[in-house]
Length: 290
Image (tube, rainbow, N blue to C red; front, side):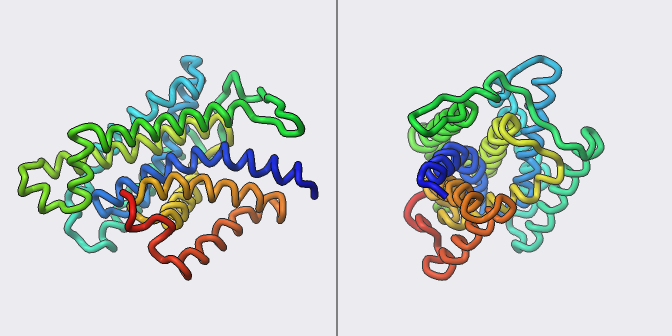
């Protein structure tokens, strides 16, 4: 075990953390605004991966180019799910919401099995094998591009939420839905846009991840669990916490794969989750930032 190996693992985890951050930001936005636990989050991510795979196979589009199209497609899916299903159970107990979203997750997973089969897939990218050396360390160009794109996507979301009229309304509805109604805001429309944006975030993350890791319909549930892990560590409803939590979890898993064995890398992030729940149940940034 050398310091160079640990530094390489930390660097790889940091760059991969952008993906974790983006998918966690989407989940945190949905929960922070609608107070709905989206159990289909990982399945939406897998569908983003499959859309990128189809666009690469049929049209020759690199996932680093088509991720915007995948985000737009998942935004539409999110709008349909929210308007057709979620909107009907917003005032229902949380267990009913969870059962509904579990049903959506099962439908999406089995639909992916029917259309694409159970085999693992991976999107081809022109940057898949490119590396840049920085002294004793190497930088995976695909991961570097992925981190840059996820950072740009997250910054664009931040500017939308804090600089646009719709973004201000979304934050107002997240703080006090009744107050937003009093000032004349269309809360139903706000909820639809927020859910769509959350789905778009995870769709973009899925498209970018398709160029880095193999995926299959069975990968949906682990991604959902990872998303919830990150959001709880960062603080439920905190977008800033979700972003930093994604990087923290990715680095922890990458170091865990080196210090332990790759199959046990999630153990480190779940130990981190347990410690957070014991000593800071609201998460690292819970109650501070939306």
